[in-house]
Image (cartoon, rainbow, N blue to C red):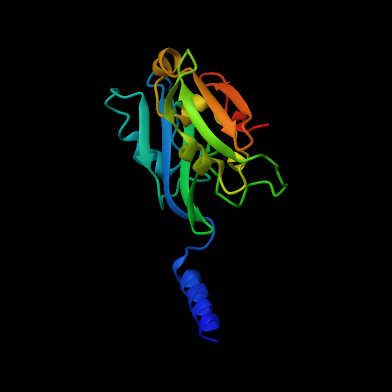
Length: 200
């Protein structure tokens, strides 16, 4: 009797304290600007962003857009390489999504079909001699999402990782994946995408 009461209390406590699935924690936007290109602004969000472009110093921008009205806006012509990163809860765990779709919302625009893949045990950034350099196992698992499909999004690994292209070419050219069965796969950081971070 006491055990049943205790398990019921734990269940209700977990239900009350666990955020609902796909509750967004934070959103970040990264993009590049071509200062020589003419552009037209049609939305308040981009009007606010454009105020930081006038100094012509930076070509790459990173902004926190949590609770801002950036979705369903018209991206100015001089903006390229737009990357949206969304951190959210699912089943009490924190996941991240990365996409080039400014209108992406986790759990709303994803496919419902099942994808089978063997869980990854280790993911390492490796050098030219295949020696492990940086362990990114947890990062890849977070971005893969609860269905291990990277939310159906295909983003270049160059954008997924926080390294310059020169650093990737000279120091971190490859990623080695190992699944729980011991199968291995190597992908290139400057050519492949997030959809390649799976075995098989």
